[in-house]
Length: 109
Image 1 (cartoon, rainbow, N blue to C red):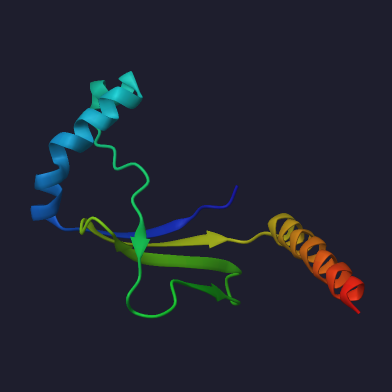
Image 2 (cartoon, rainbow, N blue to C red):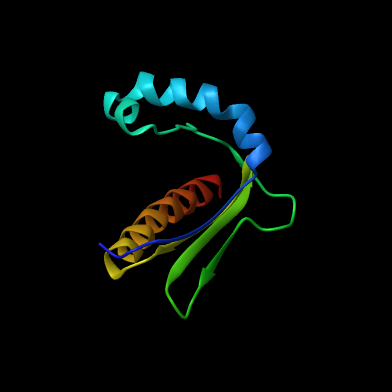
């Protein structure tokens, strides 16, 4: 599996406000988290008020997704490499969707 690259900014004042709840979430999710002091921020919505929230880098064949955490905690950007196998799966998925659209359009004639 190819390594993924992430860029993460955490706002400490917000982190301090959310820390107790995140600690409880971690402990309730997995007892290993209790042992290592983990915090869990589960399913935080990303919002983006600066335009697009993704791009494809053709030089690295990676999908870059970014946004601000809705709860104000900070910002994240992650690069997800798209290898040949994943690219093939994506193309197959969209070909199926396009064929469905084509069938609907032909039936509507």
